[in-house]
Image (cartoon, rainbow over all chains, first blue to last red; front, top):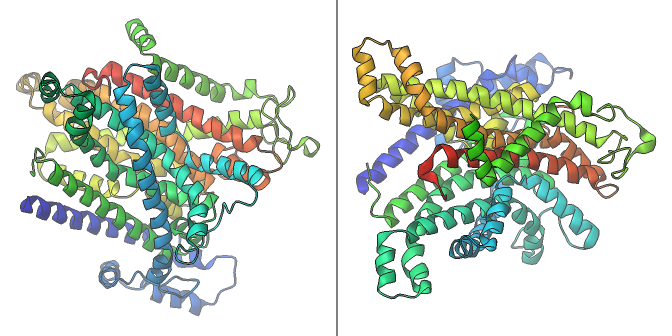
Length: 316
Length: 277
C-alpha cells in the first residue's frame, strides 16, 4: 500500500510538471506578439510600457530561463501579477476560490444525497415501470445542459417568486440564509447531470452485486431482502460509485464555471472568462493551473480511498 | 447490415436514439430547404412572438425566425462536433496504435503526454486553447479535438496491445506482414467496435461542449446562428419572451440526447459483456 501511494504521488508530480509546462507555453502559442495583444493594438501605448510588461512577464529572457523563473515562482506560490490590477494573481484567485469550492462541494453533497435513494429504488424495482422511468430520466439527465436548466430555473423563479434572491453572492458568514438561498438554484442546476450518472451507476452496480454468489448464499440462509440489500450488497456496490466521483468532479467543476455566468456568482469561472476578454493572460494561466491542481489532487484522493476501501484492488 | 438494424430496432433505447440522430442531422442537412425565413433576416415588427403558423417556434429580439435559426444552429453545432470528434478519433487512435505497437519509450512518452492532457477538466482545457487561439467555431472544433484525443488514444491502446499477443497476429508477422499492415489490417478492424461506441458518445458530449463554449461567448461568434449563443443572448429578454431560451436549450438537449441514446444502444449491441449496465 505504501509503495502504491508513493508511486501514485510520483505520477502526480510528473503530471503536474507536465501541466505546468503546457500552461507556461500557452503564452508562447498565441499567434502574434502576446504583449501587444495583451495591451490592445488599437490603444496608443508607449514603447516603454510594452517593454516594461515584456520584462515583467520575463519574455525578454531565453525560454528555459523564463520557465525556470516561472516554475520557481510557482513553488513559492507566486503565480505572477495580474496585468490590469497589478495585484498578485494568487491573491485574486484566493479571493474567488472559496466561492467556487462552496458551490462545487454543495453540489457534490446534494448529488450524493439524492442519487442514493434513486439508485437503490431503481435497482430494487428492476424491470418495473418505475425502473424504466428512472432509466429514461437518468439518460436525459446525463445530457441535460446545466446552463439551460439554470436559465429556465432563473426564469421560473423570477416570474413566480420575484422576491426570491436568485442571483449574486453573499458570504456564508455574513448571511447564511442569503448565501444558501442564492446558491440553491445553481447547485440544483449543476447537480442534475451528476445525480443522473451517479444513480445510474449505483443501480447497475447494485444489480451486478445482487447476482454474485455470496448474495445467493446469503439469500439461501433466509435473510430478508432488506438485510441483503443494505448489509451485504450496498457496500460492495458503492465501490464503482466512488471511482467515478473523481471523474464527476471534473464535470462538476466545468459545470460550475459555466453556471457562475448564469447566476452572476463571482467565482473562478467569472474570473477566467473576464480575464480572457481582458487578455489578462497571467490570470488565465493561474486560474487554469489552480483548478487543474485541485482536480488532480481530488482524483488522487479518490484513487487512494478506493484502494483503501477495496482490498481486492491491486496496488501495481 | 440488415441484421444490425433488426437488432437495433429490438434495442428500444438505441433505436429511439438512432431516430433522433437521423431527425436532427436531416434538419441540419436540409436547413436551406426546410427554413421558413432567412436565419439572419430581421423583422423588428414581429419581435418577441410566440409559436404560430407563421413562426413555428416564435421569434427573437430582432424578429428573426427561431425555427430557421435552430436549423442553422444545428449546422454549426453538428458540424463542429463532427469535425472535432473525427480529428480526435483519427489522431487519438493513431497515437494509441503507435503506442501499442512500439511499446517501450515511445509508448511511455505518448501515454504520459495523454495523461497530462487528461489531467485538465474538459471545459477548462478547451477554454485555455480558445484563450490562446481566439474565439471562433473553427478554433472551437480544434479545441474539442485536442481535448478528446487522449480519450481515443487510451481507448485504442489497451485492446490493440492485447490483440498484438494473439496467435493470428504472430502468424501474420511470421508471414512477413509489415508493421502498418499488422496494425491497420489485422488489429484495427477488431478494435473498431469500442471506438465506434465512443465516437457516438463523444459526439453527444461534444455538442454540449460546443454549446457551453458558445454560451460563454468563446465559441461561435455572431451573426452565425449557434444554439449556445442564442440561449445566452435570450437571457436579456427572457422576461419579455421565454420562447427562445426554452427552444434553443431544448434543441441542444435533443441533439445530445440522440447521440447518447444511440451510443448506449450501440454499446449493448456491440459489446455483450456490458449488457444490463
